[in-house]
Image 1: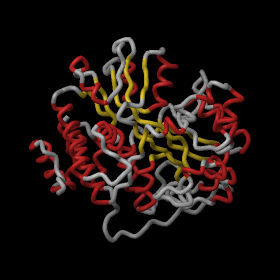
Image 2 (image 1 turned 30 degrees about the vertical axis):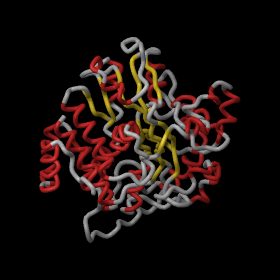
Image 3 (image 1 turned 90 degrees about the vertical axis):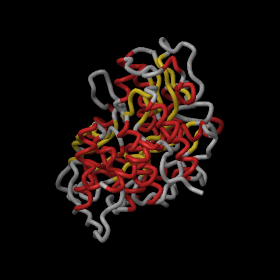
Length: 402
């Protein structure tokens, strides 16, 4: 027997209202500060709409490229420049505008969905988004098919990532970086450290905990803590059990903030002292603001994900985008990026290249995880359309009540 709605009557009522009034939801959410993230309720393109047509490629006459990505996700020097990207521009003559435009998959999708539906330029020729969002974009035919002959270095993609269920053979996407979601804490303020997700609910941290607005990471970690295999055929009941935990911690004031990449600012300001977080981010803020934070895969397990390059349907610079992807699949370049961002590189040979830079770097389990480390993390399984709508509705309803 399944339970499609949370037990909490307030949250249940919010879900029901959301399902009845999606057309007026945008204004409501904006007023409550949830914004475009809740647009996941409209995850599918309108019934009966035809697929948009890919833009004509004018890369030969326009050597430019706009790349939208997440914060702290490319190598950067003390002047705020991107060394590997500058070399690409020097080598190819393609002028790249690098835009830190992605804070959260849902928020970004909410901003560009209407243009994608119409096949229009979204202001980015290349975007890096997470597996499940890429799955949605491919299903909706909002991204262009890649010409892998123009990306010969794509043969360096590690074997385990070559045939994901959402893109067999990698016709529409190639991974940029991967990572873990786990827990982190301020070592000065929480000297005893944390081991589990349940440790975040300790009364001493009341009102000082942050969690991610990425449903699959926050709820995924809670499900893992509950002993659920998130990569397997888990039930609606098991998902909603985790929603109940999440809802209770929000209602009790244990969780202070629910954010995308902006959660880093809360850690820096000490608005939050512990959080559900992304692995590489903690290395970056330790470098920027002092060695104050620790990351760990919790005892119940962490989530494992990849962000992927895709070319939006309205981009007229597909060939330029393919040239950039090919460049970043050179092992030496991939190793240089990995050394800075501290996420898992998808490029075969990058570990050996990293060892030449710094032997200790090649042993970093957050960049080059071994089998034992990978065994402690799980990929949140793909959801069908009904599950995605129902689960996102439940998650967003908690955000509405926060």
